[in-house]
Amino acid sequence: MKQWLQRFMYGRYGADQLSVFFLVLFLLSTICNVFLKWPYMIYVYVVLLVLCYARVFSRNIYQRRRENEQFMKLYAPIRNWCKDKKERFRDRKTHKYFQCPKCGQRLRVPKGKGEITITCSKCRNRFDART
Image (cartoon, rainbow, N blue to C red):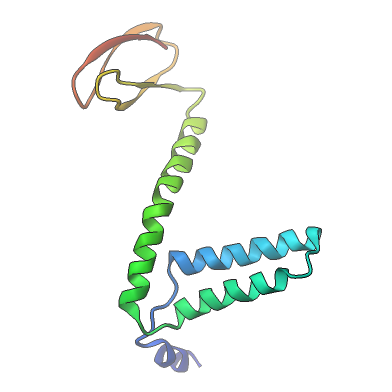
């Protein structure tokens, strides 16, 4: 069975971030529809599943790769923003974040040190701040 699947998928694109995104949208829409009970939501399900599986089983690897790169260009800033917020939340008790007034570089310093002089690691600008 495993060899049959490997032979079947040979030369096909397979799963990537965009197809996983379509699959997650499908799952979220099914969960939402349990509560909302919209009668025409089935069409959204079908479209999302068709897009997902069409990408996975496609033989046009070059086109699928380009589509995924375009999706990642849109998705990367959102992912980085969320990652930054998660990191700041995790460090909220031990560190404080500042922005260099000259170059805008984000700087992380330990809390509870009082009035300190912070040196930017990028442009070597010095400024005073209270932690």
